[in-house]
Length: 198
Image (tube, rainbow, N blue to C red; front, side):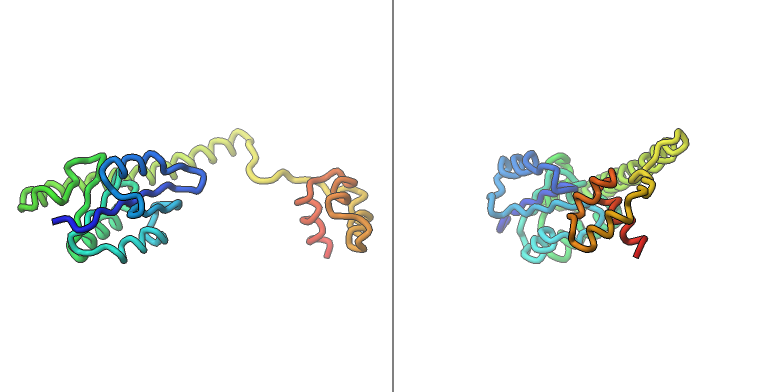
């Protein structure tokens, strides 16, 4: 018998929205005050909301997530965490996007086998996609470098009037912004050359 229903949502960065996940968790019946949200990468499980949720998870509690990749992206760690929740904590898990991943049903040997098999497959796919994204990024950067695309801040030559303006700034006769403008360079470059001249 289910004690408490808990929801978990995760997005990879603060700029992303978790609204769609929250809507589905609420529609399932997860109380709003039982939803834990993290805004960080799923590369491991050291996430504040997730760790708090696991600490509070009791036997017969039900954890609901939208998809397996919201739980994490590391294949082995997802499997370990699934075992931790279902075996050690004796909780249940439902993955909304994958009805076969529902530990509240078919608790017999065949049901457990099917759920474990599907979990392993999906966890592998999630991690493989993460590896592929990294590889595509690396290939894209290498290709761009071959075409002469420059990465990072451009090299800016030190202006002839830099030392003069730097001295005025050091003597508090000019603000750094004014000194940088006099030199015709960005503020970051003004500070960068200042560090080199010291």
